[in-house]
Image (cartoon, rainbow, N blue to C red; front, side, top):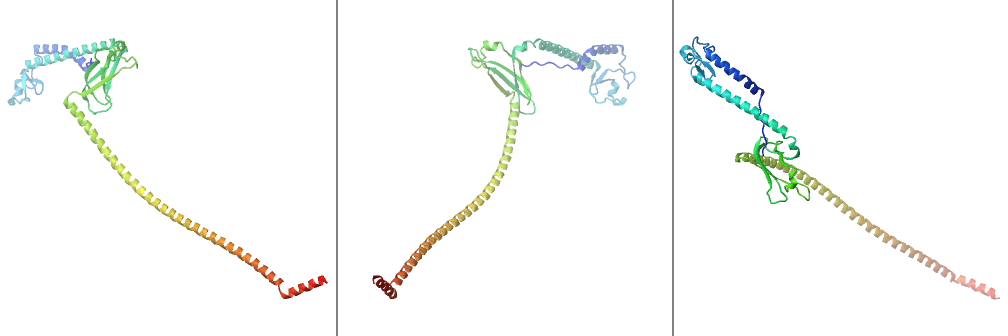
Length: 321
């Protein structure tokens, strides 16, 4: 079941079909009457020869240089043979055109007749999304998987040209009403499954496709190499930046270490100062204690002087007298 083709018939072909029979009759009458059978270059000479080079009728003098003929060394044959050949070619062309017209009319009738029938059939097409820019002829097969039954899958094969964006297939692939009864419809999931196969028709087409894929892979390789080179440059820049950052971090760490050492030294100094302050306070307390002791000693010494003892004895006597 392949894709049908409608023959193309131009307006010129229809025109030829209409006027050629009448024209042939007119030519026959002119030949019979001898009206169009005289040479315009050499009077009274019959046009009995056909120049194949110029595709015109000529006389015998036109082939001779002595008569100043314009068709010397040209290919020629008799007018009767040329006439018969031309008539046969024209009749064959007329028959081909009529056959093409009839075939086109039949195809139009078939398409008009099958419009209603195609409403209930499954249409399947293959479309080439990417590939060679020039058309390549492929042999393709579409297989409709059968889920139940002993019969094999339903497979249809075809041949057609593919180009990116082109599609080939079948408008009437399988009847929708027969999918379930023939076992092609999955009963559990309500789906159908296809298997597609596609390959170039000849080894030459296959070689073209392989060469195109190789060129695509080569272009991709070059693109990847450029991308890798760009990434390498970015990596080097990042490594330089990282090295600079590491240097800055090391400087900051050294500065931090110096600050820590300075803080530790300051803490030690503060501890020393605090210890000395405590010692100073203790010395001050000892000095005050010594001062108090000295004052007490001085007071005691003052009480035990001889003058004081005499005065005290006199006061005692007076008190007892």
